[in-house]
Image (spheres, one colour):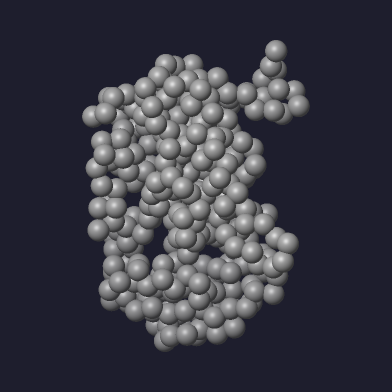
Length: 332
């Protein structure tokens, strides 16, 4: 017999009619608000399923709706607590597979372990590949994610993988809020130049680069600004903000070089430890992040952090996948 934890969360499933049969939207507990937003975009109601835990914290899932022959989409970011949310995702997919779902798509807006995509030294794992294997073996037929830390992680999966991009949402937001003739896009490190260049091209803005040296994990030291940023409104663009140290140091360096204001547009707000407080006290005018990770109350109460909703983007991608239409054309 299982014992639900006090205040245990409930996972929900939505159903709608698609061209190829029934569609079921299945949400884990990592980001229920985002899952509800996706369901609203798809104009579908949510039905119950249960995710509960034994007294020793083992996860138990019961799908309380017929999914036989259905096209199922499981929405679950593997954010903090990463291991709990990953296990929920795996167990939900196993439950669906054993319930004779026709196809299972793992919709992972934030793909945890993505920063462990290579061996940084001897006797270290490639955890992103391990997680890809686990998701595949648990029953996923395809994967949908947003702004992978490294694009080559798509190749870690032996199943179709759609890597969506938040840049169109960011571009629209920037165009609505700023005079583009004074905007400069800035990559906070050399590794993110391709991402920043892509956004800069969309708004026809110049590009600058922060040259930094990272002494140890979670810490960074800004060394140099490559580009003439004086008088510009600078937009730092990256995929993940974790400790916030890189953005804070980058903003200080840009302002020291004469930048007018510094904003940051980041896909995934991991914001671990004291990152929210660090951003709040920084010289960043505003940090804009998507809601791929469920925001904390502290984050929502911070005046210089703003959320950019992605439910519409993911909902459209799900709809196109279900009807066998192009997903990549969303970003043309």
